[in-house]
Length: 302
Image (tube, rainbow, N blue to C red; front, side, top):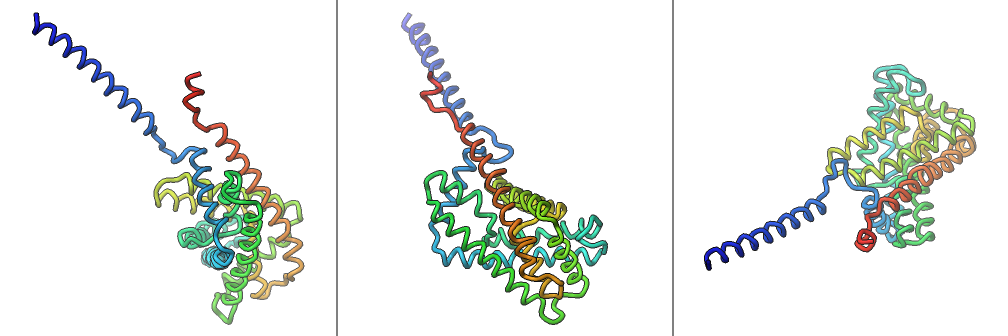
């Protein structure tokens, strides 16, 4: 009888231990929910706000140097695009094989920009705005970051244009492609320039969102290449990239004045980029993240 009681107790104890082990495994599985496509929206916003907070609290001299290098870095993409288009012919200002090949070459500039940790003005939409929304920075810091990054992006692009336009540094074919593209961009009517800029700001902020969400260097390179290619294929109007192209074209002999660039391209590009990046991506993704926040234990119990 003693042996039977011991076996019964052992069985019950074994069952309890097994049940506890099963519960622990289920909890572990819940904590390690598969994420085949990267982080969820609340996690992206939280991580973005932490990165953005670092930018908001960075000294303005650091903002200036980073943005200056960014303006020069992205200009390499314009050179790659123009050179590739000139090699196959057809022109990047119109739908052609040249546009396709140029679009595929352009993201080289984004790789230099992003892997090299320099920044464009439009990269400072999602990250620092998330930092402000999460109370990790102030609107004053955001305004200072935007002003410095835009000014020094343009200065970097201008210095690059001054260098690349000297003598015969840039061959005739790519130079002609840049002139044709710049002429095309300042010939947009204001509404077209604005809408094309809206898409450019939207896509650049999508790029930032996806880079935070993605896992692994390879997937991030694919994202950079895909978004960069799409921006060129759509001939979308990015305030800094378009300025870099126009600066080079002006110094290479394009009949474009500073006033024409400001009124026909810069101002509509600036407004469109801001609305596209802040409203169509940053705001929508932030709201989405609020609705995907995990429920608290109290809410689950209720």
